[in-house]
Image 1 (cartoon, one colour):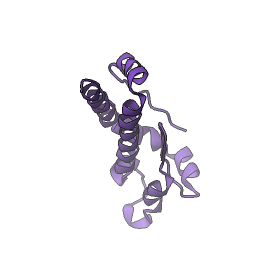
Image 2 (image 1 turned 120 degrees about the vertical axis):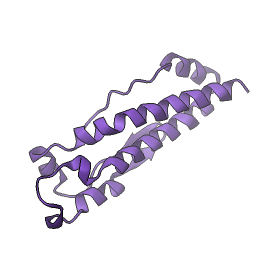
Image 3 (image 1 turned 180 degrees about the vertical axis):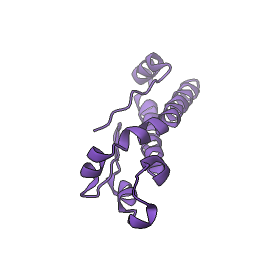
Image 4 (image 1 turned 90 degrees about the vertical axis):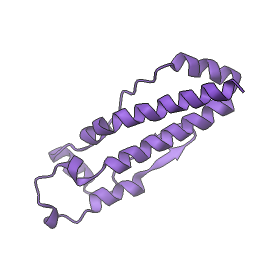
Length: 124
């Protein structure tokens, strides 16, 4: 499993907001998690896999299998390829860290936006 270290500016504010309006925080955090998972799916493309095998010799199934590896539920999100050979490919040519690294700035932006919407919601 690949884990990202996401910097969320104002995490202390989210904790304070949770104490005041947990449903509001949960709503926007779930949206940020979902958007982040789809950000990774969007970046699971040939340019980021950087395989040496020519594109014409590959089926594209590994890339498409990310769509089936999406899990989002209450304050949780995960994504990964479901192709049965994905682990072997990753061991020989680690592609997940590259996809995660490329996705990280947008993921941080999704969580930053969530904090902004939480703050706006608290002010109402």
